[in-house]
Amino acid sequence: MNDTELDALLEPPALSQPATLADDLAVLIEQAHRGATSARRTPRIVAAATALTLVLGGATAAAANGAFDWSPWAQDSPSNRYVLPSGIECEFRIGAVTGSPEAIAAAEDIIETTDFVSMVDVDQVVEELKAQGATFDGLSADGVYNAGMADGANSVFLDLLAARGYSLDDGDITSAQMEGQCPGLAR
Amino acid sequence: MPGPRAVSEALTASSADVLAYFRRRLAPEDAADALADLMVTAWRREKSMPADPLEARLWMFGIARNVLANAERGQLRRTRLGARLRATLGAGDAAAASDHGIEVRDALARLDPELAELVRLVHWDGFAIAEAALLLGLPASTARGRYQRAKQQLREALAPATAS
Image 1: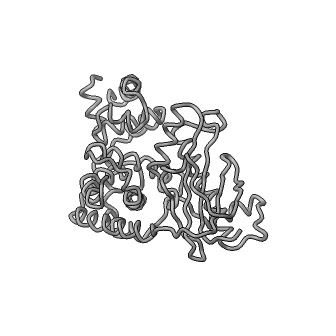
Image 2: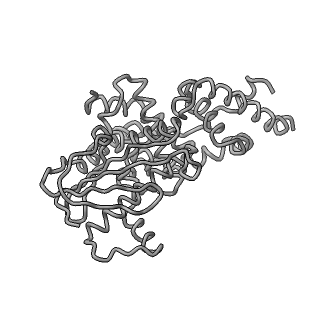
Image 3: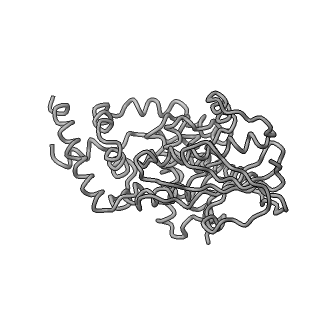
């Protein structure tokens, strides 16, 4: 088989072209804009903040209260904003990745282009954590939600890295950090 | 820094191609939700969108790769955003997908996943090998070598089927 014959076989599958497709896409662009901006309100800067440091590969997140500036690595990292059940707005950033140059490049691309918040089903993550024996005694609904978001974002990050062939187990990635702020959230 | 108008223009320019990318890899109803996810992500990440239209297109497809990976994890959410497009795509794609050569799809599926995706990006999505290399995070020379290897494997896999 020559190249021309093979190229002909590799022609893309035919796709139907509905008459309303262009209109549907235009509507979706606008709806997505509204959807994105409605969940992206500017976070309030108040005295109490919560920092989350996520340990890659585990579900543990250490929280500390008090206002703080973003760590140097997080200053320019993309912001991931979400709203707790109480209405408190939170934000986390992922970065400070160490490992092989190729894995770091892949991780940085994922961090830059992934909407982690939309990819995490917090309720499902919390249920899974409970099924694994995790307890959330003493945590408010906000605290439980926060733990689910942190663990879910961690999983999404690791899964997307794995989809590109990089993993913790293989030593491609040796560490990464997540830092978050939830103004007004008491631990 | 690109503003909302630039994002809107970039989405308008790329959305049909990105939708085709999803439709060729996912079920029709999932493709609609994947595109909705991509658009929301693009708007949220507007500050990081390159100003150059060609780079913006590659940036969109970089997001698309992540959305696709998430969909393949079974984590795609049914959203109201995708409902209208989901209805439009409806049954049309089911018929189209079944028409496409099963042998070719099977041969692609038997390739190493990275080789298969490289071939799909070039032949299905119209990317130059160097652009596909950028999307896959590969040096262009590596991508060219893999592309040739993939085509050789496809040639061998498809030869008996087409000869019969």
